[in-house]
Length: 86
Image 1 (cartoon, rainbow, N blue to C red):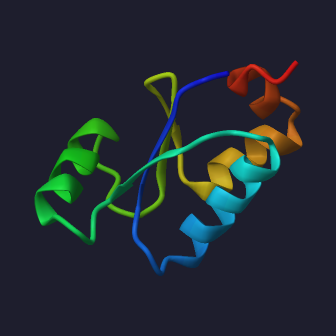
Image 2: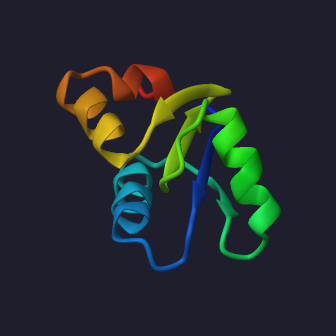
């Protein structure tokens, strides 16, 4: 199983949908709540090459993007292989 990290906030609807999709796939998620510590948001922006919105999702340290990017990977049948669910 892949390591998934997600920068998120507690009330973001896209974050909630991303968590739901990954959970349905049996994936554990390391959630980094940027609303708890503003310096974490700065780290997220740096690590995601300038993206400022949440969620920002990383699978095995590879930046996937946000929720819609992840859904596109799922639609293209790529997400499961990234997660190691084959």
